[in-house]
Image 1 (cartoon, rainbow, N blue to C red):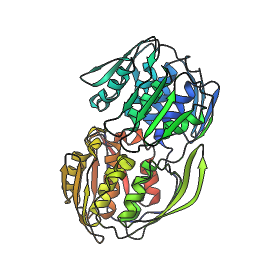
Image 2: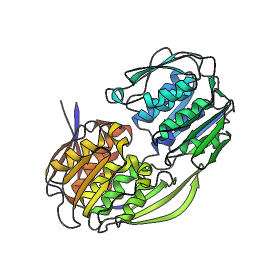
Image 3: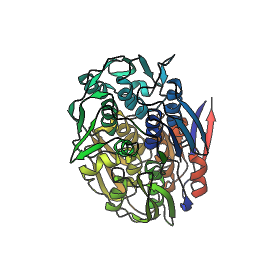
Image 4: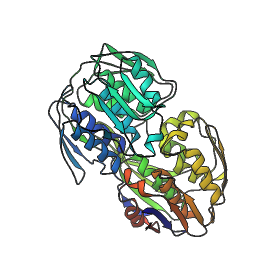
Length: 441
Protein backbone atom coordinates (compact mmCIF):
# COMPACT_ATOMS: atom_id res chain seq x y z
CA UNK A 1 0.00 0.00 0.00
CA UNK A 2 1.15 3.53 -0.83
CA UNK A 3 0.12 6.24 1.58
CA UNK A 4 -0.44 9.87 0.71
CA UNK A 5 -1.67 13.09 2.29
CA UNK A 6 -4.38 15.21 0.77
CA UNK A 7 -4.48 18.66 2.34
CA UNK A 8 -7.18 21.24 1.66
CA UNK A 9 -6.01 24.83 1.28
CA UNK A 10 -6.18 27.62 3.83
CA UNK A 11 -6.91 27.68 7.51
CA UNK A 12 -4.86 28.75 10.51
CA UNK A 13 -3.06 26.93 13.32
CA UNK A 14 -4.12 27.58 16.90
CA UNK A 15 -4.30 26.09 20.38
CA UNK A 16 -1.60 24.33 22.39
CA UNK A 17 0.07 21.02 21.55
CA UNK A 18 3.09 18.88 22.37
CA UNK A 19 4.89 17.14 19.54
CA UNK A 20 6.52 13.73 20.10
CA UNK A 21 9.77 13.26 21.98
CA UNK A 22 13.11 14.12 20.46
CA UNK A 23 14.28 11.33 18.17
CA UNK A 24 18.00 11.98 18.67
CA UNK A 25 17.67 11.83 22.45
CA UNK A 26 15.38 8.79 22.32
CA UNK A 27 17.98 6.84 20.29
CA UNK A 28 20.75 7.77 22.70
CA UNK A 29 18.73 7.01 25.83
CA UNK A 30 18.44 3.34 24.81
CA UNK A 31 22.04 3.05 23.58
CA UNK A 32 23.64 4.52 26.69
CA UNK A 33 21.14 2.91 29.06
CA UNK A 34 21.98 -0.47 27.53
CA UNK A 35 25.72 -0.21 28.25
CA UNK A 36 25.26 1.41 31.66
CA UNK A 37 25.33 -0.34 35.01
CA UNK A 38 21.87 -0.37 36.58
CA UNK A 39 18.35 0.46 35.40
CA UNK A 40 17.66 3.55 33.29
CA UNK A 41 14.14 5.01 33.33
CA UNK A 42 13.13 7.04 30.27
CA UNK A 43 10.08 9.32 30.02
CA UNK A 44 8.83 11.02 26.85
CA UNK A 45 10.38 8.36 24.57
CA UNK A 46 9.50 8.74 20.90
CA UNK A 47 7.38 5.75 19.91
CA UNK A 48 8.23 6.09 16.22
CA UNK A 49 9.64 3.43 13.94
CA UNK A 50 13.22 4.73 14.00
CA UNK A 51 13.52 4.74 17.79
CA UNK A 52 11.74 1.38 18.03
CA UNK A 53 14.36 -0.04 15.62
CA UNK A 54 17.08 0.98 18.06
CA UNK A 55 15.20 -0.64 20.93
CA UNK A 56 14.80 -3.93 19.03
CA UNK A 57 18.48 -3.95 18.12
CA UNK A 58 19.53 -3.79 21.76
CA UNK A 59 17.08 -6.51 22.65
CA UNK A 60 18.83 -8.61 20.00
CA UNK A 61 22.13 -7.73 21.72
CA UNK A 62 20.88 -9.24 24.97
CA UNK A 63 19.48 -6.19 26.77
CA UNK A 64 16.15 -6.38 28.59
CA UNK A 65 13.99 -3.38 27.73
CA UNK A 66 10.46 -2.83 29.07
CA UNK A 67 8.05 -0.66 27.07
CA UNK A 68 7.43 1.62 25.42
CA UNK A 69 4.18 2.43 27.21
CA UNK A 70 2.86 5.99 27.06
CA UNK A 71 6.38 7.20 26.36
CA UNK A 72 7.96 5.29 29.25
CA UNK A 73 10.82 2.86 28.72
CA UNK A 74 12.92 0.92 31.24
CA UNK A 75 16.38 -0.23 30.13
CA UNK A 76 18.14 -2.86 32.22
CA UNK A 77 21.78 -2.04 31.53
CA UNK A 78 24.37 -4.77 31.02
CA UNK A 79 27.46 -2.61 31.47
CA UNK A 80 30.13 -1.53 29.03
CA UNK A 81 31.16 -5.09 28.13
CA UNK A 82 27.87 -6.95 28.63
CA UNK A 83 26.40 -6.95 25.12
CA UNK A 84 26.01 -10.38 23.48
CA UNK A 85 26.60 -11.44 19.89
CA UNK A 86 23.38 -11.15 17.85
CA UNK A 87 21.93 -14.22 16.16
CA UNK A 88 20.96 -12.28 13.02
CA UNK A 89 21.70 -9.00 11.21
CA UNK A 90 20.62 -5.92 13.14
CA UNK A 91 17.88 -4.09 11.22
CA UNK A 92 18.03 -0.29 11.54
CA UNK A 93 15.01 0.21 9.27
CA UNK A 94 15.16 3.83 8.08
CA UNK A 95 17.22 5.07 11.05
CA UNK A 96 20.47 6.58 9.78
CA UNK A 97 21.26 7.94 13.24
CA UNK A 98 20.97 4.46 14.75
CA UNK A 99 23.21 2.87 12.13
CA UNK A 100 25.99 5.45 12.32
CA UNK A 101 26.07 5.58 16.12
CA UNK A 102 25.93 1.78 16.35
CA UNK A 103 28.94 1.53 14.06
CA UNK A 104 30.93 3.30 16.76
CA UNK A 105 29.43 1.43 19.69
CA UNK A 106 29.83 -2.00 18.08
CA UNK A 107 33.32 -1.33 16.70
CA UNK A 108 34.88 -2.13 20.05
CA UNK A 109 32.99 -5.37 20.72
CA UNK A 110 34.58 -8.79 20.62
CA UNK A 111 31.90 -10.26 18.42
CA UNK A 112 30.84 -9.85 14.82
CA UNK A 113 27.72 -7.91 13.85
CA UNK A 114 26.05 -6.73 10.67
CA UNK A 115 23.88 -3.63 10.33
CA UNK A 116 21.23 -3.53 7.62
CA UNK A 117 18.47 -1.08 6.69
CA UNK A 118 15.59 -0.45 4.36
CA UNK A 119 15.96 0.54 0.70
CA UNK A 120 16.45 4.21 1.52
CA UNK A 121 19.02 3.65 4.27
CA UNK A 122 20.89 1.17 2.09
CA UNK A 123 21.79 4.05 -0.24
CA UNK A 124 23.15 6.38 2.43
CA UNK A 125 26.90 6.94 2.88
CA UNK A 126 28.65 5.22 5.77
CA UNK A 127 32.27 5.68 4.72
CA UNK A 128 32.48 8.97 6.62
CA UNK A 129 32.06 6.93 9.82
CA UNK A 130 33.92 3.78 8.77
CA UNK A 131 37.15 5.55 7.81
CA UNK A 132 37.89 7.32 11.12
CA UNK A 133 36.80 4.18 13.00
CA UNK A 134 39.33 2.22 10.94
CA UNK A 135 41.98 4.69 12.11
CA UNK A 136 41.05 3.62 15.67
CA UNK A 137 41.67 -0.01 14.73
CA UNK A 138 38.11 -1.04 13.88
CA UNK A 139 37.45 -3.61 11.15
CA UNK A 140 34.44 -2.48 9.13
CA UNK A 141 33.24 -3.62 5.72
CA UNK A 142 30.62 -1.85 3.59
CA UNK A 143 29.17 -2.27 0.12
CA UNK A 144 30.79 0.54 -1.85
CA UNK A 145 30.58 2.76 1.23
CA UNK A 146 26.91 2.00 1.88
CA UNK A 147 25.02 -0.57 3.99
CA UNK A 148 25.03 -3.39 4.82
CA UNK A 149 27.80 -2.70 7.32
CA UNK A 150 29.78 -5.66 8.66
CA UNK A 151 31.70 -5.04 11.89
CA UNK A 152 34.36 -7.61 12.74
CA UNK A 153 35.67 -8.23 16.27
CA UNK A 154 38.87 -6.59 17.48
CA UNK A 155 40.91 -7.00 20.66
CA UNK A 156 41.05 -3.28 21.35
CA UNK A 157 40.64 0.15 19.81
CA UNK A 158 43.04 3.05 20.21
CA UNK A 159 42.07 6.64 20.85
CA UNK A 160 42.72 9.13 18.06
CA UNK A 161 42.61 12.83 17.46
CA UNK A 162 40.26 13.37 14.51
CA UNK A 163 39.47 16.61 12.69
CA UNK A 164 36.12 16.15 10.94
CA UNK A 165 36.11 17.37 7.31
CA UNK A 166 32.44 18.33 7.65
CA UNK A 167 30.16 19.08 10.57
CA UNK A 168 28.24 15.93 11.56
CA UNK A 169 26.83 15.08 14.97
CA UNK A 170 26.44 11.46 13.87
CA UNK A 171 30.12 11.06 13.00
CA UNK A 172 31.18 12.82 16.20
CA UNK A 173 28.88 10.64 18.29
CA UNK A 174 30.06 7.41 16.64
CA UNK A 175 33.68 8.24 17.43
CA UNK A 176 32.90 9.17 21.03
CA UNK A 177 31.00 5.91 21.54
CA UNK A 178 33.91 3.98 20.05
CA UNK A 179 36.17 6.00 22.33
CA UNK A 180 34.50 4.41 25.36
CA UNK A 181 36.12 1.12 24.26
CA UNK A 182 39.47 2.60 23.20
CA UNK A 183 42.82 2.84 24.95
CA UNK A 184 43.72 6.42 25.78
CA UNK A 185 41.84 9.53 24.79
CA UNK A 186 39.63 10.15 21.77
CA UNK A 187 39.35 13.75 20.58
CA UNK A 188 36.98 14.97 17.87
CA UNK A 189 37.47 18.44 16.38
CA UNK A 190 34.40 20.03 14.79
CA UNK A 191 34.59 22.50 11.88
CA UNK A 192 31.29 23.98 13.11
CA UNK A 193 29.07 23.32 16.13
CA UNK A 194 26.70 20.35 15.88
CA UNK A 195 24.11 18.93 18.27
CA UNK A 196 25.71 17.86 21.54
CA UNK A 197 23.14 15.39 22.90
CA UNK A 198 25.72 12.60 23.10
CA UNK A 199 28.16 14.62 25.18
CA UNK A 200 25.40 15.86 27.49
CA UNK A 201 23.94 12.41 28.01
CA UNK A 202 27.33 10.77 28.53
CA UNK A 203 27.90 13.31 31.29
CA UNK A 204 24.53 12.41 32.80
CA UNK A 205 25.66 8.76 32.85
CA UNK A 206 28.81 9.72 34.76
CA UNK A 207 31.33 9.83 31.90
CA UNK A 208 33.82 12.69 32.02
CA UNK A 209 33.67 14.52 28.68
CA UNK A 210 35.85 17.59 28.16
CA UNK A 211 34.91 20.40 25.77
CA UNK A 212 37.55 22.94 24.77
CA UNK A 213 36.33 25.18 21.98
CA UNK A 214 35.76 23.00 18.93
CA UNK A 215 37.34 19.93 20.59
CA UNK A 216 35.50 17.16 22.47
CA UNK A 217 37.56 14.59 24.39
CA UNK A 218 36.86 11.52 26.47
CA UNK A 219 39.04 8.82 27.99
CA UNK A 220 38.30 5.17 27.22
CA UNK A 221 37.18 2.61 29.77
CA UNK A 222 34.93 4.83 31.84
CA UNK A 223 31.87 2.98 33.20
CA UNK A 224 28.37 4.37 32.71
CA UNK A 225 25.92 4.58 35.62
CA UNK A 226 22.17 4.35 35.03
CA UNK A 227 20.28 7.67 34.93
CA UNK A 228 16.74 9.01 34.65
CA UNK A 229 16.04 10.68 31.29
CA UNK A 230 13.15 13.02 30.44
CA UNK A 231 13.03 13.38 26.65
CA UNK A 232 11.96 16.86 25.47
CA UNK A 233 9.59 17.42 22.57
CA UNK A 234 11.55 17.30 19.31
CA UNK A 235 12.29 20.74 17.87
CA UNK A 236 12.66 19.09 14.45
CA UNK A 237 9.03 17.93 14.72
CA UNK A 238 7.97 21.30 16.10
CA UNK A 239 9.53 22.90 13.00
CA UNK A 240 6.53 22.10 10.79
CA UNK A 241 4.20 23.89 13.19
CA UNK A 242 6.60 26.80 13.69
CA UNK A 243 6.61 27.35 9.94
CA UNK A 244 2.89 26.63 9.50
CA UNK A 245 1.84 29.13 12.17
CA UNK A 246 4.27 31.73 10.79
CA UNK A 247 2.89 31.58 7.23
CA UNK A 248 -0.86 31.09 7.85
CA UNK A 249 -2.74 34.36 8.57
CA UNK A 250 -4.54 34.38 11.92
CA UNK A 251 -2.41 31.64 13.47
CA UNK A 252 -1.58 31.70 17.19
CA UNK A 253 -0.09 28.42 18.44
CA UNK A 254 1.74 27.27 21.57
CA UNK A 255 4.19 24.36 21.34
CA UNK A 256 4.88 22.85 24.75
CA UNK A 257 8.05 21.41 26.36
CA UNK A 258 10.20 21.89 23.24
CA UNK A 259 13.89 20.97 23.45
CA UNK A 260 15.97 24.17 23.35
CA UNK A 261 19.46 22.70 23.12
CA UNK A 262 21.56 25.57 21.69
CA UNK A 263 22.98 23.22 19.04
CA UNK A 264 19.42 22.63 17.75
CA UNK A 265 17.80 26.10 17.78
CA UNK A 266 19.05 27.27 14.40
CA UNK A 267 15.50 27.15 13.04
CA UNK A 268 14.36 29.69 15.63
CA UNK A 269 17.20 32.05 14.77
CA UNK A 270 16.62 31.70 11.02
CA UNK A 271 12.87 32.24 11.29
CA UNK A 272 13.42 35.29 13.49
CA UNK A 273 15.85 36.73 10.93
CA UNK A 274 13.01 36.27 8.43
CA UNK A 275 10.69 38.26 10.71
CA UNK A 276 8.85 35.44 12.51
CA UNK A 277 6.97 36.19 15.74
CA UNK A 278 8.19 33.51 18.17
CA UNK A 279 8.05 33.99 21.94
CA UNK A 280 10.02 31.72 24.29
CA UNK A 281 8.18 31.03 27.55
CA UNK A 282 8.75 29.08 30.76
CA UNK A 283 12.40 28.16 30.16
CA UNK A 284 13.53 25.26 32.34
CA UNK A 285 15.65 22.09 32.33
CA UNK A 286 14.57 18.46 31.88
CA UNK A 287 17.04 15.62 32.17
CA UNK A 288 20.04 17.84 31.47
CA UNK A 289 18.46 19.42 28.38
CA UNK A 290 16.98 22.95 28.24
CA UNK A 291 13.27 23.09 27.33
CA UNK A 292 10.68 25.84 26.89
CA UNK A 293 7.22 26.56 25.54
CA UNK A 294 7.09 28.42 22.23
CA UNK A 295 4.29 30.75 21.18
CA UNK A 296 4.27 31.45 17.45
CA UNK A 297 1.96 33.84 15.61
CA UNK A 298 1.53 34.64 11.94
CA UNK A 299 4.02 37.21 10.66
CA UNK A 300 5.15 38.90 7.46
CA UNK A 301 8.30 37.00 6.50
CA UNK A 302 11.11 38.37 4.35
CA UNK A 303 13.72 36.57 2.29
CA UNK A 304 17.26 36.41 3.66
CA UNK A 305 20.69 35.01 2.98
CA UNK A 306 20.89 32.31 5.64
CA UNK A 307 24.09 32.80 7.69
CA UNK A 308 26.36 29.79 7.05
CA UNK A 309 27.04 29.42 10.76
CA UNK A 310 23.38 28.62 11.40
CA UNK A 311 23.13 25.91 8.74
CA UNK A 312 24.50 22.99 10.84
CA UNK A 313 22.18 24.05 13.69
CA UNK A 314 19.10 23.63 11.49
CA UNK A 315 20.13 20.97 8.99
CA UNK A 316 17.09 18.73 9.54
CA UNK A 317 14.66 21.64 9.46
CA UNK A 318 15.51 23.00 6.01
CA UNK A 319 12.65 21.28 4.16
CA UNK A 320 10.24 23.25 6.36
CA UNK A 321 12.38 26.40 6.06
CA UNK A 322 12.23 26.15 2.26
CA UNK A 323 8.43 26.35 2.56
CA UNK A 324 8.77 29.43 4.77
CA UNK A 325 11.10 30.99 2.19
CA UNK A 326 8.50 30.49 -0.55
CA UNK A 327 6.01 32.46 1.58
CA UNK A 328 8.44 35.31 2.29
CA UNK A 329 8.82 38.62 0.48
CA UNK A 330 11.98 38.52 -1.62
CA UNK A 331 14.80 36.08 -2.25
CA UNK A 332 16.16 33.50 0.20
CA UNK A 333 19.61 32.02 -0.42
CA UNK A 334 20.87 28.90 1.37
CA UNK A 335 24.51 27.77 1.02
CA UNK A 336 26.72 25.35 2.92
CA UNK A 337 23.98 22.72 3.18
CA UNK A 338 25.43 19.95 1.00
CA UNK A 339 24.64 17.49 3.83
CA UNK A 340 20.99 17.74 2.71
CA UNK A 341 21.85 15.72 -0.39
CA UNK A 342 22.62 12.58 1.64
CA UNK A 343 19.66 12.47 4.00
CA UNK A 344 16.67 10.11 3.60
CA UNK A 345 16.42 11.64 0.14
CA UNK A 346 18.37 14.30 -1.74
CA UNK A 347 16.44 17.00 0.10
CA UNK A 348 17.75 19.80 -2.09
CA UNK A 349 16.64 18.16 -5.33
CA UNK A 350 13.36 16.77 -3.97
CA UNK A 351 12.28 20.04 -2.32
CA UNK A 352 13.20 22.04 -5.42
CA UNK A 353 11.17 19.68 -7.61
CA UNK A 354 8.18 19.89 -5.30
CA UNK A 355 8.30 23.66 -4.92
CA UNK A 356 8.45 24.10 -8.70
CA UNK A 357 5.57 21.65 -9.15
CA UNK A 358 3.53 23.97 -6.94
CA UNK A 359 4.52 27.09 -8.90
CA UNK A 360 7.45 28.42 -6.85
CA UNK A 361 10.69 29.65 -8.45
CA UNK A 362 13.28 27.44 -6.71
CA UNK A 363 16.79 26.86 -8.06
CA UNK A 364 18.87 24.06 -6.52
CA UNK A 365 22.62 24.57 -6.14
CA UNK A 366 25.29 22.03 -5.21
CA UNK A 367 25.08 23.03 -1.53
CA UNK A 368 21.74 24.76 -1.15
CA UNK A 369 18.94 26.57 -2.92
CA UNK A 370 17.77 29.97 -4.13
CA UNK A 371 14.06 30.61 -3.62
CA UNK A 372 12.15 33.60 -4.94
CA UNK A 373 9.55 34.22 -2.26
CA UNK A 374 6.04 34.98 -3.45
CA UNK A 375 5.06 37.27 -0.62
CA UNK A 376 3.03 37.37 2.55
CA UNK A 377 -0.48 37.60 1.13
CA UNK A 378 -2.78 35.27 -0.74
CA UNK A 379 -2.00 31.91 -2.26
CA UNK A 380 1.67 31.10 -2.72
CA UNK A 381 1.41 27.49 -3.88
CA UNK A 382 -0.64 26.19 -6.78
CA UNK A 383 -2.87 23.18 -6.34
CA UNK A 384 -1.08 20.00 -7.33
CA UNK A 385 0.75 16.84 -6.35
CA UNK A 386 4.30 16.39 -5.10
CA UNK A 387 6.45 13.35 -4.39
CA UNK A 388 7.93 12.88 -0.91
CA UNK A 389 10.18 10.01 -2.08
CA UNK A 390 9.60 8.26 1.23
CA UNK A 391 11.18 11.15 3.16
CA UNK A 392 9.18 12.03 6.28
CA UNK A 393 10.41 15.62 6.52
CA UNK A 394 9.61 16.32 2.87
CA UNK A 395 6.09 14.94 3.36
CA UNK A 396 5.29 17.04 6.42
CA UNK A 397 6.79 20.19 4.91
CA UNK A 398 4.56 20.06 1.86
CA UNK A 399 1.57 19.26 4.07
CA UNK A 400 1.91 22.59 5.90
CA UNK A 401 2.51 24.36 2.58
CA UNK A 402 -1.20 23.80 1.83
CA UNK A 403 -1.99 26.50 4.41
CA UNK A 404 -1.00 28.98 1.67
CA UNK A 405 -2.15 27.03 -1.39
CA UNK A 406 -4.75 27.90 -4.03
CA UNK A 407 -6.24 24.41 -3.96
CA UNK A 408 -5.71 20.90 -2.63
CA UNK A 409 -2.13 19.67 -2.25
CA UNK A 410 -1.48 15.93 -2.55
CA UNK A 411 1.74 14.56 -1.07
CA UNK A 412 2.59 11.04 -2.23
CA UNK A 413 4.67 8.35 -0.50
CA UNK A 414 4.19 9.44 3.10
CA UNK A 415 4.36 6.14 5.03
CA UNK A 416 7.71 7.00 6.58
CA UNK A 417 6.24 9.95 8.49
CA UNK A 418 5.69 7.44 11.31
CA UNK A 419 9.45 6.95 11.62
CA UNK A 420 9.83 10.30 13.36
CA UNK A 421 6.34 11.67 14.01
CA UNK A 422 3.69 9.07 14.84
CA UNK A 423 0.25 10.66 14.92
CA UNK A 424 1.26 13.65 12.78
CA UNK A 425 -2.02 13.78 10.86
CA UNK A 426 -4.19 13.73 13.99
CA UNK A 427 -2.12 16.35 15.79
CA UNK A 428 -1.94 18.61 12.73
CA UNK A 429 -5.69 18.26 12.19
CA UNK A 430 -6.36 19.20 15.81
CA UNK A 431 -4.33 22.38 15.31
CA UNK A 432 -6.26 23.37 12.19
CA UNK A 433 -4.54 21.75 9.21
CA UNK A 434 -7.14 20.30 6.82
CA UNK A 435 -5.33 17.03 6.26
CA UNK A 436 -6.42 13.48 5.52
CA UNK A 437 -4.40 10.36 4.88
CA UNK A 438 -5.18 7.99 2.01
CA UNK A 439 -3.96 4.57 0.94
CA UNK A 440 -3.94 2.86 -2.42
CA UNK A 441 -2.56 -0.40 -3.69
